[in-house]
Amino acid sequence: MRGATGNSPARAAVRWRSPIFCVASRRRWGPLSLWRADSGPPQIVFAAQYGARLRRGFVDCIPLLSAFRSKREAPTSAVAAGPADYERESLQALKDRLDRNLVIVDVGCRWGFAEAWDQLSPNVTLYGFDPDAEECERLRSLYKGKDVTLVAQALGSRSEERTLYLTPEPACSSLYKPDPVLTKSMPELHCASEIGSTTISLATLIEWALANDIPQIDFIKLDTQGAELDVLRGGEQSLVPVRALEIEVEFNPIYIGQPLFGDVDRYLRDRGFVLWKLSTFAHYSDRSYSGALPQPDHFFYDSEAATRPTFAGQLFWGHAYYVRAEMAAAAIDERSRDKAQFIRDAALMNVLGFSDLAARLLKQA
Image 1 (cartoon, helix red, strand yellow):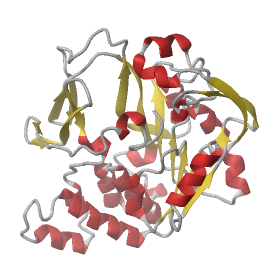
Image 2 (image 1 turned 90 degrees about the vertical axis):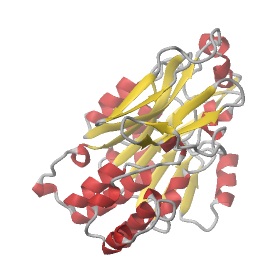
Image 3 (image 1 turned 60 degrees about the vertical axis):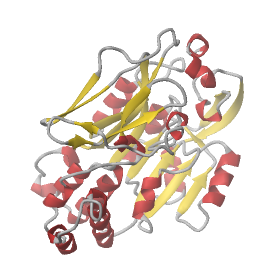
Image 4 (image 1 turned 60 degrees about the horizontal axis):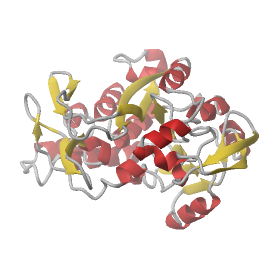
């Protein structure tokens, strides 16, 4: 459950699988991939969740980039110059126009940062938090020479001493007590069973930002096993300049008393954010039923539809992406027009894979 954009145990198992673009929508081939788990039936998942994105239409919205236009007009094959080639070129053009580094904060960075941020290098500064000092030291060695800072510190709603409930999988340890009934009845949640506890010191995000002279954060990723809302509350002032967030949210509790998606959603909407996308849904069951269910899931993207099979289990968690309400708005208030901010926002959305939003922002710049 830990991690963003590729940092969870559930998703680590599929990183090596090559995507197969084989599932058709109503009008054209869609960006889906087919993979087989170590056991059980094949599953069809959105390749966009695992870094194998097929993004279309971005080039049509960037007439201001002459190099981009030249690439479009050149008679090249789809293999030689596909959507990914265009986007790499467009991102480089955006990076050349950035007025400063983008600042990314990853709270719950066990196993490392999302590889997508490498695309912004050297125009990105990364800060990662994890209470495990050994893991932070390992990551320091991994990212040596890069603009990366690892902080062996747990964050919360206020500075205090709290109980950390320990689990067989360290990434599942939480400030909230695991539900023993749930972790015993659902095999896939045994990794979140309580095996002990310890006391740790919490700080707040705003305290850290002020102490380290970090005036502006552009993007925050939160994966703290149920304590995401606590971290947000402890960093409310730090949220003011933030443009987007990725948050692991629970739809049903795995930990006793933890805030759920509705609580997080209300908090962020009250502070000027809107939900842009939900992804990476995790379902758990007691395994009393195996195989695909007769009723598939349907996804609709304007006039395009995508269908995938469903399997047994109750929905427990997923990843929610939020952006500033003014970024998502179809029309931008002239009074809020800031060209440098549009460029920063477009670069950020490009890396996150939201090419449609990046294109719209560039039109407004």
